[in-house]
Length: 217
Image (cartoon, rainbow, N blue to C red; front, side, top):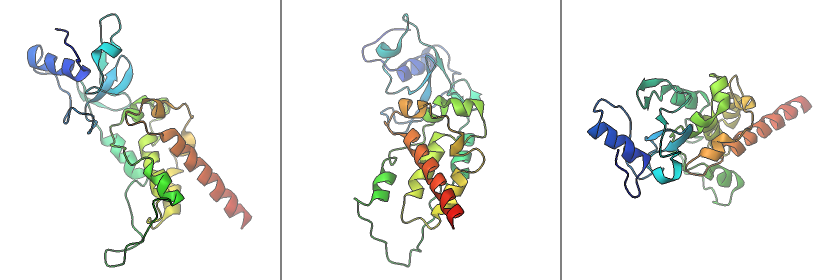
């Protein structure tokens, strides 16, 4: 295919679909690094293809493009995201407030330690790049994965959550944070420069603290 200036991997995939193989299946939406739907494996590494310039990743003037790892392939470059979001739910990713709409809002200072910790992952858009990068997920399909556990850590630190211990319990159940091998691929490949590895470490510390407090009672 023709080489162009500032060409992205998504441009390559689109050119192939428009000019060579109309049946090629893939996903994209915004094209500006906001939605994460165009994530694919590029030369063996998970990336947002709309932000990945061909000139930075070509090896010998060639590219290898594939569907995200660790997820079932629907067709070609499109994967089934259901397992990813099912684990998000299993990890307790839903916000369960401690007050109803009829009750006054609980004021929280931006400098509150819990708020600061919770805000660190606010830019996660569920693109599943960290999930595809995770070797623990590859070896253990029951593992909840970096994104789901990072979300659990965010909720655990949110003072407006009704059942923080419940969040911790789900995050430490079978397939939970103790399964993480701390290799750090999730943090290394996150396009938004988030740090799921530190969030998982936080859950491990919280679980250990909770355990020893119960033993001391």
